Image (cartoon, rainbow, N blue to C red; front, side):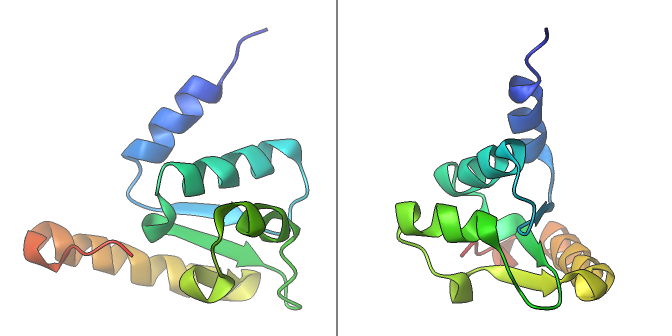
Length: 104
């Protein structure tokens, strides 16, 4: 069986924007979210939630990382297209003017 994890982390590092379904309670999503925090990729990640904003993945990861939800980019599923478009626009602006780059 092939281990795709090496490919996944390379794609996460390369991709300008990441989106994680924070309500998905799978070991794979938990592993991905843990990597986002461990590799300091939260500045380019959008955490998606259902209407009630439940996020079991974050409930598990945040205490281990001493992070807070209010410091993350969060969007409900129905807001995801707008939130992603906004992040794409930010990436484009940074590429035009690298001085605007300031990961949080």
